[in-house]
Length: 323
Image (tube, rainbow, N blue to C red; front, side, top):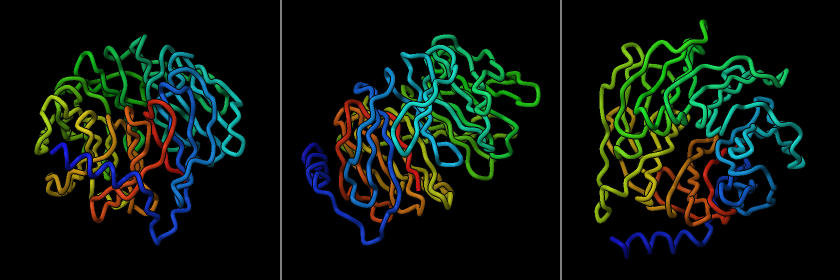
């Protein structure tokens, strides 16, 4: 299997440009490089590197497309970066050690997981102030808001739970027990399911959002790859909702899962220690941030193959695709 993986990575070192123009831009947070790499998705060529705060991780774009928001973990802030210049124009009060965040459905609030002080911080973007904080389980990381806007969920890696926060009361009302070290959470578009990656457990768990109970656990088996290397992290759904793209960490693979059947359609070998993912706006590509090979893999979802790579900075962790 090592020969197969090596061959896949070798092929991916030669960029292959799709006949379809991908007029979007990728922004990659480099955790060890304290930088953001900007990539033109059509050519898959890096076009800029921006210096940012310490240990950058979570990354997203504002609703109007003007700014990149970035968790600068060791600076204890969320940085606001102008897309046209790469200039840091503001530092938002995020709480201690921001890891990940979720931009609210209306674009007005950032919900930030603070690992050091076990809290969720809600930042009002217009006023650049803290709207409220809620205590949650230890080592919070993954954050998501339900499609109906009523709930925010936050994983607690140390307590092995997903915390449910009622936004009408700004309070935590329930916790769903998960397998070991839940990292990332993602709602399906209809809001009926919450998918949770349990990194150390080596599984993805599906939670019924009505009962808040785990209804299914997805296991992964890659020929030639030890179970101890399968460490699920990032999850993204394609725009049509049919496929879940799941980063499997030190397994150096991404799983493509049919959402309806909950079966793995394919395992795609990518770079080393894949962390997080982005999906192209047209749903044809996935982009995987590979934390130990310092590159991004481009995955053609129809063929389930890597078609190229792009070099980035040291320790790519988060990635966002912007049309």
